[in-house]
Every structure is written in C-alpha cells, then in structure tokens.
Amino acid sequence: MKIVLLGKNGQLGREFRRILPILGEVTSLDREELDLCDHAAIEQRLGELKPDLIVNASAYTDVDAAEKENELAMQINARAPGVIAETARKLRATFIHYSTDYVFDGGKNACYIESDATHPLNMYGKSKLAGEEHIQQAGGAYLILRTSWVYSLRGNSFVNKVLKWSRQIKTLKVVSDQISGPTWARTLAEITGFVLAQNKKELYESISEKNGVYHLAGNGFTSRYEWARQILANDPNPSEQIAHTIEPALSGDFPSPAVRPLFSALDCSLFERTFGLKLPDWEDTLQLAMAR
Ligand SMILES: NC(=O)c1ccc[n+]([C@@H]2O[C@H](COP(=O)([O-])OP(=O)(O)OC[C@H]3O[C@@H](n4cnc5c(N)ncnc54)[C@H](OP(=O)(O)O)[C@@H]3O)[C@@H](O)[C@H]2O)c1
Image (cartoon, rainbow, N blue to C red):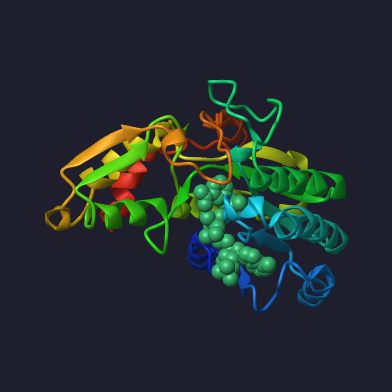
C-alpha cells in the first residue's frame, strides 16, 4: 500500500511516522515539500505519488492567531482538505483527516455526539468545520476524526508548558472552567493505525462503508486546572519544581483573542462501537506518556 502523510513534523505527524510504515510504503511531507496553501501543488503532487491512503496530520492550529489570520486558516483548514478529498476520490485513495471539539460552542454542558449541532465560537473552529464540510461534499472514502486537547511530550504542548511554568513560577494559575478530553498524539496515531490495519484488505471499500465524522479522544474529561495538577503529579523530575501551589482561575482572568468553548468534551462511543475498540482513559494515558 502507498501512503502519503501530510504534516510530518506536527505532534500527530511525528507519531504517524512511527506507525504508518507498518502498513505500507510511506512518503512523509512537511510544509516545505508541499504547502497546503498551494492547492494546485496538492493535486499535482498527490497525482504523481498515486497513494492508496492519505493521512492529513497538518493544520493551522494556532487558535488565537487564527482570529487575525483567518484567510490563511481557511486556506489550510477548509479549502486544502477539500482539494485533498477531491483528489483522493479521483485516485481511489482513502483519506484520513482530523477535526476538533472547537466546532461546538460548549453550551450543551454534556459530552457532544457527532449529530449534535455545530456552532464554532472562533475562527479556528469555523475553518475546521468548513474543512469537514468540503470533505463530505467531495465524497470518496474518508474518516473525519474530531479530537480534543492533543498533546505530546515535544515542543510547546500544554504538558511541556506546565512543566516549564512549574520550574519558573511559585504559584501557578490554571483555568478550571474549560473542560474537555486530553488526547495523547501517540494514542491518536496508534488507534487510527489499528483501524486502518483492521480494514487493510479492501481499505477503500471498507472505509467508504463507514464514511463520516467520528469523535476520537482520550476517554473521560477534565478541566485544564485538573489536567495541570495531574501533569505535575506525573512529573518524572518533581525535585525541579519550584511551584508549591496550583490555583484554579477563570478563562476571563486570561483574556485571549479567541473565545473557547467551556465544555467541549466528546462522546466517543460511536467510534468505539463502529470499530470495536475501547478507548483508554485520559489519566492512564497521561501517566504512560509521562513515564517515557
Ligand atoms: N493540538 C490540539 O490541541 C488539537 C485539538 C483538536 C484537534 N486538533 C487537530 O488535530 C490535528 C493534529 O494537530 P497537531 O496538534 O498535531 O498539530 P501541530 O502540532 O500544530 O502540527 C500541524 C502541522 O501542520 C503543518 N502545517 C501548517 N501549515 C501548513 C501548510 N500551509 N502546509 C503544510 N503543512 C502545514 C505544520 O507545519 P510546520 O511545522 O511547518 O508549522 C505542522 O507540522 C489537526 O487537524 C488539528 O486541527 C488538534
């Protein structure tokens, strides 16, 4: 099987670089090799590579900056996925794409299911929702996997930020009114890889039978404050912390350009039922991630 991975240097992309070679011959691309703003180049490059499977781990993910750069966010998160999906359908390639809990406004105050009404509060959420719609219009064989609070132990993730703050600040303040499900990028890649392996024999046909939007995130939900507490509790080097207190705060205490939904946890039971999998609890996964 020929596979193209887009966004190879992101949190999720790096994990897919470990997983996808189990399934086939992988061409991994970064922004320099294929800029998703260049829609003609997407069509041309994919046409040359003729993949059986396209995994899109790339996105414009700076939620606050998207408020100003909304045209760029739309190009990368909305129009590019549409072009990839169109091209994939023409090539009979299966398309795996990721979306976000920020397509919801948080007003439900309970976990969201796939058929709940969407109502993004910020430009990032709007651009990701438009991407979902473009893919659905293009058809073909695709999975749109909505996920939430993706982290890795690399770069500027929330986990690394909390660890960094704990070494610099004595009293940490973290918002307790934003609630969702932390999702380890490795788990996301592994579970997606498992689904692809399960359906590998006639991938295009099997996935087109299950086409659609699914929620896939760490099982359970928590506030950013409680998540930060768990990060510190699992710190492999606790003696380096100077933080002695962690205090709950409100989103309003930290004004930011983008409004975020307060309760955007995802109910993943449709994914579990469809693919016969049980998703691991976010706390167990965090413990595992931080023990490495
Ligand atoms: N992070 C979260 O909390 C979160 C929550 C919900 C859903 N998601 C979704 O999950 C997926 C994976 O997220 P992630 O956290 O792994 O993202 P990430 O770490 O920010 O990685 C995104 C990747 O996309 C690449 N990219 C950006 N613009 C590009 C362009 N014009 N052309 C080509 N590549 C471009 C980036 O390249 P550079 O390295 O060159 O910038 C980066 O490697 C995304 O669909 C995201 O929307 C994420």
